Length: 237
Ligand code: PXP
Image (cartoon, rainbow, N blue to C red):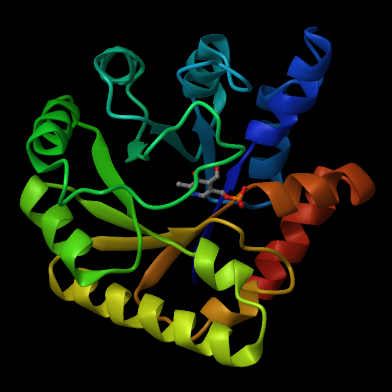
């Protein structure tokens, strides 16, 4: 069974729009767990635009599944992760102006810094995941840098307009997943996955976990979090 990890950043976005204390992403995370999801993901951004330090600290104490902290590999974030000790840290590239993470991490191009960051996090007992484009060179670099997991970026697949373009992207993700798995990495995937396109991932047996945020929170606004999570779990089979 493929696991579902739900990113609750967008619940925090609604809270931050008013600068008050509701809706609380911690409450959302508890509902996500009760609905049967296997993990909670939050991205603590440098500008704190949605998730706050307090959210990560409380989530660490209250959730019963796995906490995956997405973050940039900065000194500040590494310090926070080493103190709060999430189960997983997913290292992502971060740009101030972006609406959401725009692509995979360039592990090859930033090898020395990332190898050091991964070493510091792994040394604290945290499993480190590198969010990378489905490219052999980046996966190879992730293995060499000491990552335990790669999360394959599915954004290009999600944005593909027609069946042919989608098939090309699925093929790339499948090849990358096989390469990563043979190299000893655990494989996750995420970004832009929704109720309509999740089916395309179903044939890739190496993918153990899907990380999904926006589409689930968007549906939860209409039908409630429990139903939104259950519907996605049903589609994942
Ligand atoms: N995985 C990573 C590394 C991400 O940065 C994001 C977006 O926060 C997601 C998964 C989830 O993407 P989406 O919100 O499009 O489902």
